[in-house]
Amino acid sequence: MDRGLLKPPFFIQMIFGILGGIGAAPENLMFMKQTADKLFGDAYRWSVLGAGRHQMPLITQAAMMGGNVRVGLEDSLYIGAGKLARSNAEQESKIRRILEELGLEIATPADAREILALKGGDQMGF
Image (cartoon, rainbow, N blue to C red; front, side, top):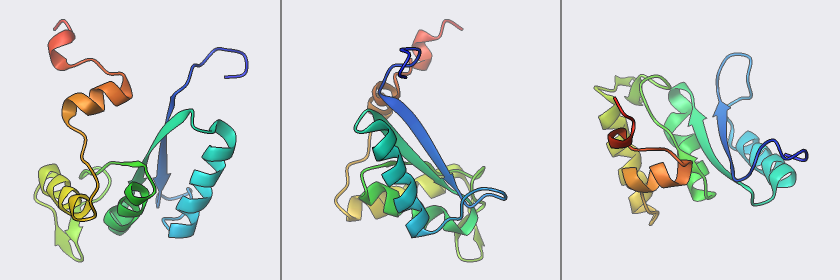
Protein backbone atom coordinates (compact mmCIF):
# COMPACT_ATOMS: atom_id res chain seq x y z
CA MET A 1 0.00 0.00 0.00
CA ASP A 2 2.80 2.42 0.94
CA ARG A 3 4.50 1.72 -2.41
CA GLY A 4 1.27 2.16 -4.35
CA LEU A 5 1.03 -1.47 -5.44
CA LEU A 6 -2.38 -1.90 -3.82
CA LYS A 7 -5.14 0.65 -3.70
CA PRO A 8 -7.81 0.92 -1.03
CA PRO A 9 -10.43 0.15 -0.08
CA PHE A 10 -9.12 -3.27 0.94
CA PHE A 11 -11.33 -6.23 1.72
CA ILE A 12 -10.32 -8.15 4.83
CA GLN A 13 -11.87 -11.54 5.58
CA MET A 14 -11.32 -12.28 9.26
CA ILE A 15 -11.45 -16.01 10.01
CA PHE A 16 -12.07 -17.31 13.52
CA GLY A 17 -12.26 -20.76 15.06
CA ILE A 18 -10.12 -22.85 12.72
CA LEU A 19 -7.32 -25.15 13.87
CA GLY A 20 -4.11 -23.16 14.22
CA GLY A 21 -5.88 -19.80 13.93
CA ILE A 22 -7.29 -17.26 16.32
CA GLY A 23 -10.10 -18.47 18.56
CA ALA A 24 -13.73 -17.61 17.95
CA ALA A 25 -14.16 -15.38 21.00
CA PRO A 26 -15.79 -11.94 21.12
CA GLU A 27 -12.64 -10.33 22.52
CA ASN A 28 -10.59 -11.73 19.62
CA LEU A 29 -12.99 -10.17 17.14
CA MET A 30 -12.65 -6.84 18.93
CA PHE A 31 -8.84 -7.14 18.85
CA MET A 32 -8.73 -7.97 15.14
CA LYS A 33 -11.05 -5.07 14.28
CA GLN A 34 -8.99 -2.65 16.37
CA THR A 35 -5.81 -3.89 14.66
CA ALA A 36 -7.33 -3.40 11.20
CA ASP A 37 -8.45 0.10 12.21
CA LYS A 38 -4.89 0.97 13.29
CA LEU A 39 -3.37 -0.41 10.10
CA PHE A 40 -5.87 0.82 7.52
CA GLY A 41 -8.01 3.53 9.11
CA ASP A 42 -11.23 3.69 7.14
CA ALA A 43 -9.62 2.40 3.92
CA TYR A 44 -11.01 -1.12 4.22
CA ARG A 45 -14.15 -3.20 4.29
CA TRP A 46 -14.32 -6.33 6.36
CA SER A 47 -16.18 -9.55 6.83
CA VAL A 48 -16.13 -12.35 9.38
CA LEU A 49 -16.16 -16.10 9.01
CA GLY A 50 -16.92 -17.96 12.24
CA ALA A 51 -16.18 -21.67 11.97
CA GLY A 52 -18.40 -24.35 13.40
CA ARG A 53 -20.70 -23.62 16.33
CA HIS A 54 -19.34 -20.09 16.53
CA GLN A 55 -20.72 -19.07 13.13
CA MET A 56 -23.96 -17.30 14.08
CA PRO A 57 -22.86 -15.61 17.34
CA LEU A 58 -19.60 -14.29 15.90
CA ILE A 59 -20.99 -13.02 12.63
CA THR A 60 -23.88 -11.38 14.47
CA GLN A 61 -21.34 -9.51 16.61
CA ALA A 62 -19.39 -8.53 13.49
CA ALA A 63 -22.50 -7.15 11.81
CA MET A 64 -23.34 -5.13 14.92
CA MET A 65 -19.79 -3.69 14.73
CA GLY A 66 -20.31 -2.61 11.10
CA GLY A 67 -18.78 -5.60 9.35
CA ASN A 68 -20.10 -7.90 6.69
CA VAL A 69 -20.88 -11.56 7.28
CA ARG A 70 -20.46 -14.86 5.57
CA VAL A 71 -22.34 -18.11 6.13
CA GLY A 72 -22.27 -21.45 4.42
CA LEU A 73 -21.91 -25.16 4.90
CA GLU A 74 -18.18 -24.85 4.17
CA ASP A 75 -17.91 -22.90 7.47
CA SER A 76 -20.44 -24.77 9.60
CA LEU A 77 -22.64 -27.80 9.00
CA TYR A 78 -25.12 -26.71 11.66
CA ILE A 79 -28.11 -24.39 11.89
CA GLY A 80 -28.36 -24.70 15.67
CA ALA A 81 -27.13 -26.78 18.58
CA GLY A 82 -26.90 -30.37 17.33
CA LYS A 83 -29.08 -29.69 14.27
CA LEU A 84 -27.57 -30.08 10.81
CA ALA A 85 -28.40 -27.36 8.30
CA ARG A 86 -30.21 -28.53 5.19
CA SER A 87 -28.55 -25.96 2.92
CA ASN A 88 -26.61 -22.74 2.66
CA ALA A 89 -29.96 -21.04 2.04
CA GLU A 90 -31.21 -22.15 5.47
CA GLN A 91 -28.18 -20.53 7.10
CA GLU A 92 -28.58 -17.40 4.99
CA SER A 93 -32.24 -17.10 5.99
CA LYS A 94 -31.36 -17.45 9.67
CA ILE A 95 -28.69 -14.74 9.70
CA ARG A 96 -30.91 -12.48 7.63
CA ARG A 97 -33.71 -12.82 10.21
CA ILE A 98 -31.30 -12.12 13.06
CA LEU A 99 -29.78 -9.04 11.42
CA GLU A 100 -33.08 -7.60 10.26
CA GLU A 101 -34.48 -8.01 13.80
CA LEU A 102 -31.50 -5.93 14.96
CA GLY A 103 -32.43 -3.24 12.43
CA LEU A 104 -29.51 -3.89 10.09
CA GLU A 105 -29.83 -3.63 6.33
CA ILE A 106 -29.04 -6.60 4.09
CA ALA A 107 -27.15 -5.93 0.85
CA THR A 108 -28.76 -7.06 -2.37
CA PRO A 109 -26.64 -9.17 -4.76
CA ALA A 110 -26.11 -6.03 -6.87
CA ASP A 111 -25.05 -4.08 -3.76
CA ALA A 112 -22.61 -6.83 -2.80
CA ARG A 113 -21.07 -6.88 -6.29
CA GLU A 114 -20.61 -3.11 -6.11
CA ILE A 115 -19.10 -3.24 -2.60
CA LEU A 116 -16.66 -5.97 -3.67
CA ALA A 117 -16.06 -4.51 -7.15
CA LEU A 118 -17.22 -7.72 -8.84
CA LYS A 119 -18.81 -8.28 -12.22
CA GLY A 120 -22.18 -9.95 -12.51
CA GLY A 121 -22.45 -13.34 -14.20
CA ASP A 122 -23.99 -11.64 -17.24
CA GLN A 123 -20.70 -9.77 -17.80
CA MET A 124 -18.33 -12.74 -17.60
CA GLY A 125 -18.31 -13.73 -21.28
CA PHE A 126 -18.97 -17.44 -20.84
